[in-house]
Every structure is written in structure tokens, then in C-alpha cells.
Length: 508
Image (cartoon, helix red, strand yellow):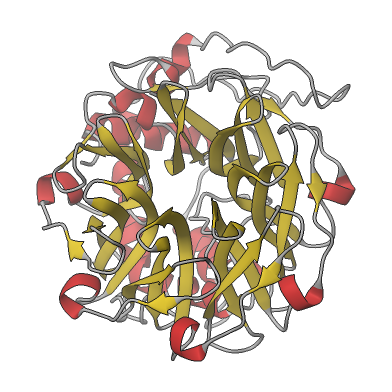
């Protein structure tokens, strides 16, 4: 459910104080809309970014009203505690095997973001190198835990999404932790984590030589952006798999978004977006060892079709492997803020090489607006997928699907008290853990504020949103992107944004 109004007002106060200046309507219009009739946000001339710019003409009046109303309310009810300054990033430079530092004692003014709660706590580690980056994924491995993500050069707090070209423009980043409480950032090596354009690690798994991370290497525009793979024996020392144009490249953008141990050894999924088109096809890569990779040949009937087909998550289960994502128009919303007809989609494979598309069932995968599966895991009756169902841009509800075998699927009936509420609720990742299953994401509003959110279930069918630990979830625009089991507990990773972007970690 959405955070209490007093917490929302506090967060707006923090945000405005972080800006240290007055923001007026003319500046908002110029920054968000430009002086021309249409300008892509961030200057990116790509269909994904154009779709985002079309949202602002519809939302501008409402957003301005919210800024005035809530900003004024925040001033009237401003708390007396000073906002804790953002700690400088400390990155170990002497050795990649530097012992992680202990958790720094939180400042009293920042307790609402970092204090322990009955079930979840926010990790506050000033020496972890969280600033200026975000974490897309994490897994148990290496010294205990490994998280991957990337730097970000955007200066504003708008949404960042790995499925489109708005993902962060910076270098890939890796963090390690022995216990989920103390973290160290692996020192940057330009030849491995950097290069021209953007490098991002979106998914990571224990496999191959020890760990395998997948993601993206290339420009942010509609040009030569390639899928990329990194490997490590221990989480500290990393290598980038040499680029093979026939495997990782092509005309346009290729991205790996998720990887799992299955099939011939490892299977990664994502998409292939040819240059200057609105046609996006699902894509699959396989490897026996994490180092040598092959691209599964394109089958238009399975991976293609009109519009965009994207595999966003893959797991071992069902007949062998199950991948989930979406199928529909490239644009998510039209000029009036109404969602177009994109549907959830599922693919299955016995071996990672031969794939089938689960036939579309409108009652399960479709409906008005957009339905998208963002994460999948084995659990519950067999498999559980999570995502969202959107009737329009301003109303998205968290959504769960279940399957006994990966082929036959059912949608869990909507419960507004658990999956809904004012604004937007999205589940972005799910794992077997806790009472049975745990899903993470966020709950909030398109123009903010939003807060990290957690849902739990014993069987994949009956769900509860975690509400007794609001303090670690709120803060400056927090989102959880991934959750994994670590030792006897759970660790979720993501980011916070506001005055500054920073990676974020939560423990249970």
C-alpha cells in the first residue's frame, strides 16, 4: 500500500532541500518538454525515449499542481531534524580482495531510512561505494553475495528501466559482501567494466567458472549496442568475454537481461532491436561454461511477431526452462496517457536450444492496457511469475501468475488491498524464500514519491504486502529490482534517487 501521508510529505521535503533552489513551472516545462514541440527526455532520439516524452504533456498540469500543493505542505510540516549529508563514495583501490568494511553507524537524522524493523532493515554502509550507481541484480556466490549494476550519469530522478534505451549511461559495477550487511565495490578496470558508451550488468548467477554476469555494452542511441558477458572465479577478479559480432552483435541493440544455470550449462535471455525499427524480437543465448557462447537461431514464429517481444527473466523449471516477458506494441502509452495493448508472454524449452511460445490466452495474459511479466521463479504450485497490469499510465497494479508446469498458466485474482492502491504498484523480481515466496518492487506514483515494496506468499496464490517495516522502505525514491536468498535470509537490491542516485540494499 502507499506510504502514509506524513512520510510522503517528509520525502518531498528531503527532495526539495536536496535541490537547494526554487523550481518554477517555466523551468519544469523547459526541462521536461523543451522549447520544441517534442523533445526526447535526456536528449535520446529513440522510440523508447519518445514514448516517455509523450507522457509529460498529459501529466504536466497535474504534476505542477502536486509540486505546489505537496511542496507547500512539506514546508508547513517540515521536521526539525537536519537531513544527513550524502557520504562521499569510498572505493578500495589497493586490491580487489580488500576485506569488506563493517556497517557504518547510521546518523540519527537518517534513521527513518536505515533503522532495523521487525522483518527488513536497510543497509547503510558509507564505505560500500553505493553513490552514483544502481544495483540491477544479486546472487549468492563469491565471498557470500555478489551484486551487479552500473554507474548512472542522469542527474534527475526519473525512472530507469533496463528494458529500454533509458538505462544508465555509465560503466558496469560489481559489489561483494560476505554477509549482506557490509559491502565493497570492486575497483574499476576500464578494459573490463568500461569502454565507449554505456556498460551495464543486468543479471548475475553462480555458474561457469564461478559467477557469470550478463548485460549490455554500447551506445544509448539506436546504434551498435551489443549483448555482453562477464565472468569471475570469486566475485573479486572479473574478465569480459571477448566480443563476437555473430553472437553478441547485429544491427541495432542486443541486450541480455537475465541468466540462469540450465540447458547446456547457462542460458541468457533478452532481446534484439534492429536499428530504426519498432520491431523487437526475443533472443536467447547459451553457453556450456560461461565463456563460450552461441546465439539460438531466430525463429519468427517463436521469438518474433508484430511489435515488440521481450524475454525479461528466465529460470530453470517446467519442462526445463521457462522465460517470461511481454508481447505488444513498442510504445507503452499513447498521447493521452492510456496504455496500449501489450500482453504478458511465456516461452518454454526442454534444453535451452529448442523453444516454444505458450499460446496466448487473453483471460490470463491479456486485458485492457498493458500486462508484463518481469520476474519468474520455481515455487508455489510449480512456477510463479510476477509483474504488473496497467489500464493506464497512472494506474498500475502488481500482478502474479502461477503454473504447475510452465505451460498452463493462471492469473491470481486481483486483490486491491494487496496488489493495488493509488498510483503504481509493480513487482519486479520473485524468489523462493521467506515463508515460501518473496516478491519485490515498488509502490508509488509515476512522478513520485515511490517506495520499495515487498510481498510474501506461502503458496504463490495468497499474498500479503509487507507493511510492518515501512521505515527501511521509504526514503528518496527507493525501488527494489532484485531479491535473492543469502544464507538463512534474504537480500534485496535496487536504488534510491532524489538529490543523488545511489545503489541500495535491504536485508531480511
